[in-house]
Image 1: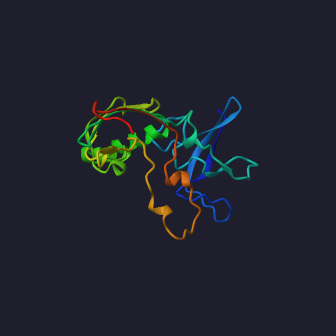
Image 2: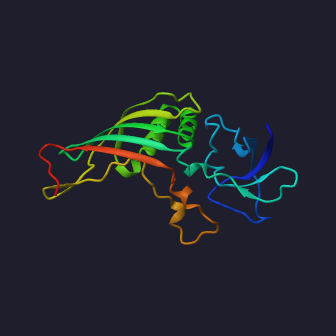
Length: 231
């Protein structure tokens, strides 16, 4: 197999292109298969072979090959739904005391699954639970409680990561007179990032990195008490 080294300037909220300001801080492999140039980052133990980690996606790179002098950008694997996608199914039960109970089934493909596997492999039980709560939108719910959870194939690499969660949250609805005002219980929210609220910035920021924009399909089924009607 025809293969080469590739020098990479990984993405760290900074996309530099012009030399000499561009500096390389990483190296991956490139190989030709059926006439197509493919890329492989072999420095991780948790990501499928077919996808680049987020730090490599769309990063500036240089193929180490005779006669090759032009910079290129690596594939945007993080936004390619064929390689990287999360599917989340939520069944939510709203209650008259303003609380909510949720059963969640999730499938995380590509770097989604790799990120979770890497984080949980290096975490103890308390850190694992805190990470899951943060991943499932603790900042959106405010008082989210994780009752139970299960990962079916955490030791795999290429196969999509499958998981189930049982959660609840108090005071999910706001009571206004005789009405209950509720939000859609998304499990994969876009959280704010302090980097985008600064008055001045000294570098070029990739907004997709700041808000963690990656392909996600969320299906939510909401059940309501019998005495509740829509207005």
